[in-house]
Image (cartoon, rainbow, N blue to C red; front, side):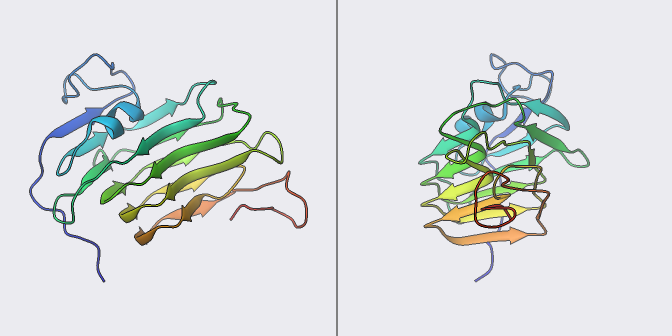
Length: 188
């Protein structure tokens, strides 16, 4: 099976480091956080995230959390790096005691993420689950040219999901130093 094609888009939205949640998400008036874009986009929409460093806040358990979000086979929800730019979700300030994820997609269908980087998801204790980019109970998800590095757990994580494509993605320097048993613990 091959990944679904990207067909004619719905609405284009934009995110930039100097954006604002109260903006309409246009090129000239972009949103600031990634979460707003992931939450707002619908089937056929494309979100372009401008280059730069986006900092998840200390209180966050997730840099981005999306549940029950669905595109379709012919009209996926596309979250792309702006062409020629490199957006980075920096999760190094997050400090949650139960679990931490850079991006978690749960019960989602037909999303296409391209050119995004997640870094700095810490494992604060051996009981804390930490993942760079994770999916649960999802299908039809494409990760293309995505990078997950410098995390305290797996760079990419998939649980009970199918039809998932990783196209030219990189996971490196992910190291679980707190889980016993073997060097690196649960990380890749």
